Image 1 (tube, rainbow, N blue to C red):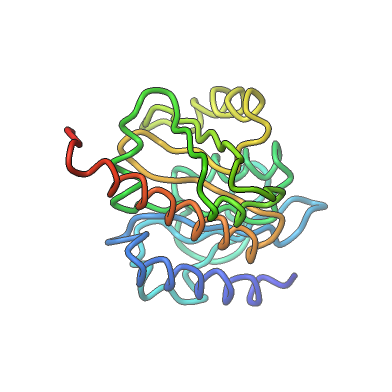
Image 2: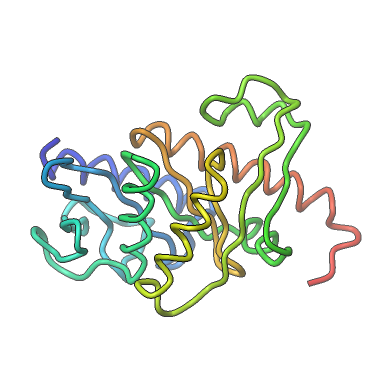
Length: 204
């Protein structure tokens, strides 16, 4: 798909995530595959307001993370997007910073979600009896160095639809931008349900 078309669709998703409180300030980053051979990834530029993101604030990077089209610089987390695309075969990767995902990302090594009808919003899930495990990885300021750890985590949890970064936010993906957006909406809803349910006894 031509970069301008992908950029327009990413900008629309970005503005929606901001409006729903999932990407406040300049947080979050969003990407979609624009070419498989060679690998090219359209990704939002670093440090931009996601509520006002425009087409010209979407860059295109190659498989090594170098900018091949557009101006500005990609997020330091662009390596995570490339990793998910390679390991999961994803067509789009979305990273949000909601209140609820940040709170729940403080738990252990992962979050178990089960028994909720909304789980059927995740690709391949057909029953509320499904148990979804959302792994939690440690935050870092050196994501290129952390790529092997993320690859290993994805290999350990092949059924996972997303993961959390501790005190940071959610990464999820899909075969295309529409499915990735649906996964964000589904998981963010479930995070809010769980966090609100625990609210009376929550201690940070």
